[in-house]
Image 1 (spheres, rainbow, N blue to C red):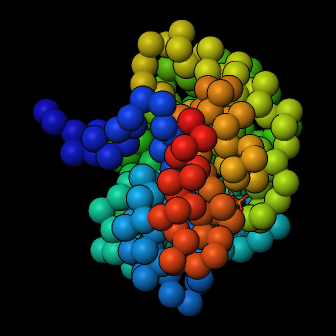
Image 2 (cartoon, helix red, strand yellow):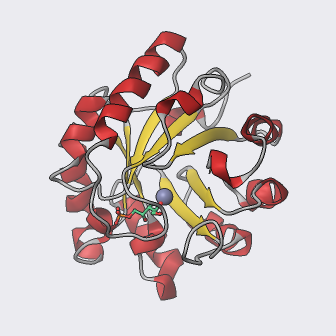
Image 3 (cartoon, protein in one colour):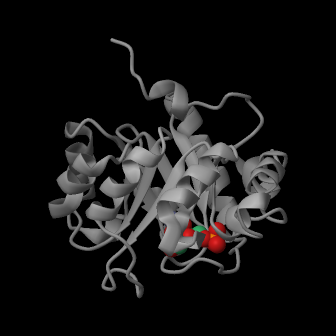
Length: 233
Ligand code: DX5
Ligand code: ZN
C-alpha cells in the first residue's frame, strides 16, 4: 500500500534540513492566511505548539483550531503536545488533522502506551525530550517511534535562547537512530536560527523547528527566511 504522507515527510535533498515553522510566532488573528503564506514560502511541515497552562506555563491552541487550519494547507501538521494528561486528547488531535503527534514522556505515566495509541490512530508518533531529559529515555522506545524531538529550550515560549548542551544529545540520538536502520526523523525545537541551525544539522538533525526565525519580518520575508535556514545544512 502506498503511503500518501511518505513523500511530504521525506527530505527532497539529502543535505538540506526540513523546516517546520512554529505557528506560535505567526499572527494569531490571521492564522489561516499565515499558514498559506508560510506554505507558499517553502515550509516543509507546519509545527503546531499545543500548551495547556499546566504542563507548561502558557496556553495556546486546541483541536478546534487545528481542525479550522487543516483546509489551509496540504503540508504535514507536526503537532507538539505540551499537555498533561495527554492520552485523552490524542484522538481529538488525530481527528482534527494532525499527521505527526509528538508527546513528552513526563506528560503521562506510560509513554510506551501513548506511542502505541498514536500509531493505532494511524498517525506518526514522536517523543520529545526536554533539555533536562537524557537521551537514555529513548532506549526502549526508539524502535517504535517515527520521530525524536530534542528541545533546545525549556518548552512554553517562543523566542528563547538556544541551549547548546543539547547538541551533544542530538549527536547521541543520531547514533541511536542510525543503529536502528529505520528512517526516524531527528528534529530540534527552540532558539533555532541562522546562528544555531548549522550546528544542529552537523550534530545530526534533519528537521528544524523555527518560530521566530521563520516568521521574522512578515510575509514578504518568509521565503527568504526559510531558504536561509535550509542553506545551513
Ligand atoms: C516552545 C515551542 C517551540 C517554539 C519555538 O515551547 O515548542 O516550538 O515555538 O520558537 P522559537 O523558534 O522562536 O524558539
Ligand atoms: Zn514546539
